[in-house]
Length: 138
Image 1 (cartoon, rainbow, N blue to C red):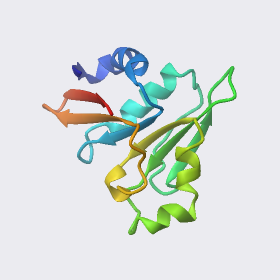
Image 2: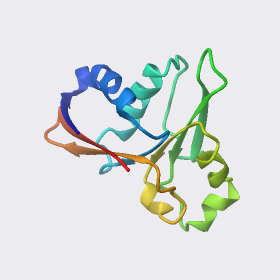
Image 3: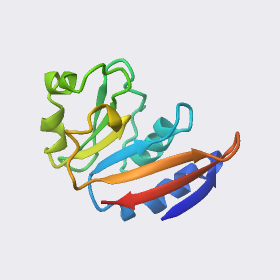
């Protein structure tokens, strides 16, 4: 499924995409600066998260409680991992099998750890203000 959007439409697109996600593990594929974190923020907003969300570039994972539920959202930025084994050190697999939402930037850093049942969101830069999002449910 494909969506083309401008930045000011991101909340609307996130509202359309969220119910289409068939798995809670969502991989984000896009070049640097394409808007992965921005789209994740919009999805978090659709889940009811009102606290300030930010990129976990240095912490690797940020956790957010989803209001009015016992569920959480885990936002991963794996860009700084040097080796896949580093993911074991912070318990990556426990997050993946928690049943909670896991939004993962740079999943290619841990190819052997990603479960088969996941969704992929690819974001392509069309121009400085326009993006194309492709959703694939595995």
